[in-house]
Length: 149
Image (cartoon, rainbow, N blue to C red; front, side, top):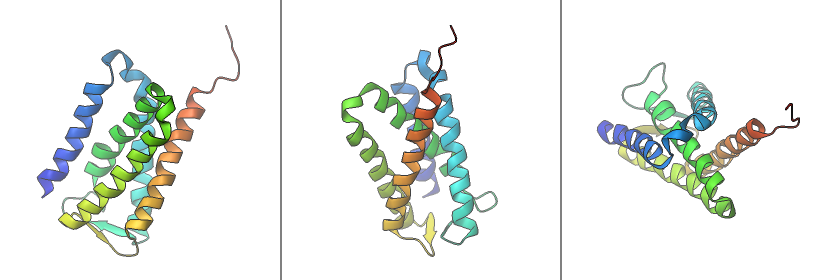
């Protein structure tokens, strides 16, 4: 089962590297880094406050495969697709929210995550906030109030 967890993370990184043109990779470093940081903070809060726990290999209770393998390419792909298909932004962001919620539920069913004071509804509401913060970070990062040239 742990192998499947790793395959999901590697698959998302492969999708990011395949979909985003190589010349644009640097442009998506901010969402990659922000999403990784956000994932680590959220997992720390969830584990410390006993909302859930990761079963299997963890570092300080955190699953680095989740925080560094799954979250960053998910956030960066959501931002990339938002930029390239702005008319479909609601579908795009909705897809990432649902995909992460369903993916988390699958990991619970596989026995890789154990809920304590958490459930699938909480996870879905959490992913609304999670991807809203990624969207806001991207808007803030790209906002240029002054033209210095």
